[in-house]
Amino acid sequence: MLYSVRVLSADNIVSTMQVETQDVESARRQFEQRGCVVVDVQRAKLSLAPSSRSSGGFQLVLFSEALYALMVAGLSLTESLEAMSEREASGATSEVITRLLQALREGQSFSGALAALPTSIPPLYVGMMRAAEGTSDLPRALKRYLDYRRQIDGVRAKLISAAIYPAILLVVGGAVSLFLMIYVVPRFAGVYQGRGGDLPFMSKIMLAGGQFAGENSLALLTIAAGVIALLAVAVPRAIRSGALARGFASLPGVGKQLQLYELSRLYLTIGVLLEGGIPLVAALDTAASVTSSGMRSGIAAAREAISDGGSLAEAFNDHGLATPISLRLLRVGERSGNLGAMMLQAAAFHDGEFSRWIERFSKSVEPLMMTAIGLIVGVIVILLYMPIFDLAGSF
Image (cartoon, rainbow, N blue to C red; front, side, top):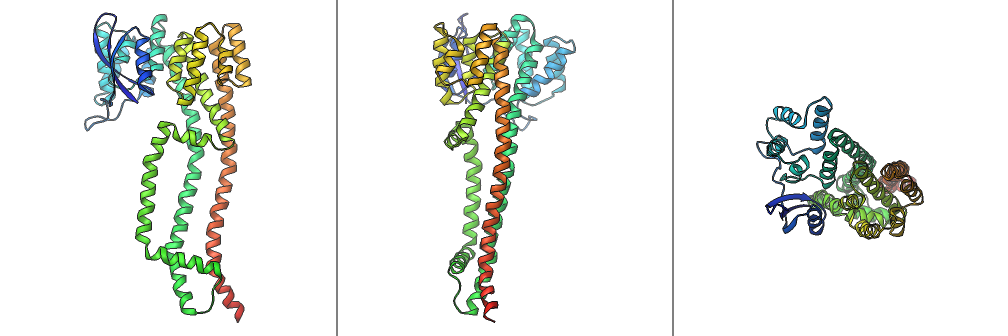
């Protein structure tokens, strides 16, 4: 969610900034960690949304790719933004670049300019840019963020592609079954009523249902369209709120795999931040904003244990944030002083494990769904033709 935060800086300057995070407390905590006094926090709307004169919304990944390419080519940050401004004549991206250039010319840092934008910039991105400013290695930070996004988006793409085919099967199977019940079955019912004689019991039930469907076809089609529209609205909301993930997590065998996905995303986020030079406690706070509400309580407890001098590996293990493999990797990372790389390795391992599970799951579910749809259509057809078989037997 997007929140508008009014803060008092260390220079006694009151300003209003926007940040995307899970809740009010998370938004408040992010600015307090920067040394600001939070005056007010309210829900906000994205002010750089697509409009009639905009070519589209601000795309952070595309912006970062263009900025990285220009800076690697040897241009400074300001020169790169000026070159991007010439290419983007209008739209939300042009407005963002203009604001960034104005802030940089006023002497602000790049990370500070990003945090002050009236649009949704992830805290992870701002934190990585702030850490890179201390080492004057902004291109490397951009490259690290782009690699992070590719890995996150790659796993998400696998989930979406695995869900597309079953969704198509459900839609096609439902449409065929509805067509049979609304159009085909009522016509067979009219033929059999004129024939007289007893019909098989199951055929009578199906024909009665077909007649009802034929007489109320408009109402049934309206209901079906309403259900589809409701799902189109409810499913994205359930995904954003985490309700869909919690529902799937309650299914046998699925909950463990979804937890692996969450842990992989957590390890990847913390690993990227640590590799970018961000302290561990700050990395945990930022990573908590990209995880589910169920995992945030465990991260908060682990953060408290680490702040008291505890080990990261043991804190994660005590609060359900580690698997046997990741626990060993984290211990190795702490002993060798290379915790960020071990976090990334743990994330890659669990990503591969989750991807293999998606592949196995889709390969087993798709044949089952095709079989179920075939059985439903086959039963309807058989029940339609059973009276004809009985009639042929009577001759």
